[in-house]
Length: 128
Image (cartoon, rainbow, N blue to C red):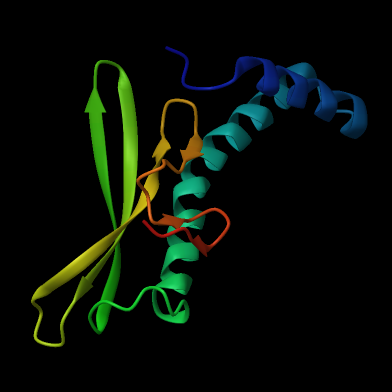
């Protein structure tokens, strides 16, 4: 399975060559660097969105302490990072959790399924 969209990387490299006057070698290096940074930035961006939502959205009301947690799942060549908002009471007891979808780390796409309660990309509560 492919980890990166090679077509997009090559198109970006040619764009850098044409617009900035880079050589094809330096354009490819820059395009690969951007692709690798984008993969890391998507999960961080979604976590920041959820941390902002955890206390500001009135639908998310379980417990007083809310934490954004991630869990990496890997099987049969697939790799995903699941996002949740986990809620605890003031004395640290588990109160509940809101599922927020996952990031497919192979294709670098965010997926919000029909059983998820929060869409991390659009910052909206979907509900059950």
